[in-house]
Image (tube, rainbow, N blue to C red; front, side, top):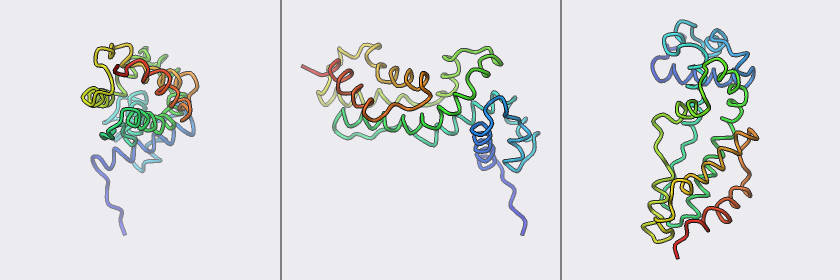
Length: 192
């Protein structure tokens, strides 16, 4: 029985999963388009038509992994619950993505001459801001004072999270995430 040819999103997904496995096993230095093509059961020209080299393929593979762990949080009626759920989801995402970034970042920056800020922009391209709806709901419920949501405070949790991941290549522990919410963020924004 002959296997049906994969096309479009199915083929892209297979390639990106293969690229992720290659990155996880060999790192960015050992990543080759040929190895990804072989693992995905396709050819190098197929990859070359989709991505202009291994840096672009790696960014796509990282984005693919990130999309497997969406950050959207539904209205739980409680700011603390929603923030902790958001950080839990971010930790699930970071656990895998940090491994890829650790292997990839230094060589990527040398190869592309881009900055970490530019890489972050590429990885987050098209993603919705998930924190704003959580904070807007909390303001509407009267849990926080909108006047206290200056940019430096609004981004504090995500800044702490990102810093931890970049400095340790691991997601912050649940205990640390609770400290950030309870001892740092909520006291800064609570109404009253």
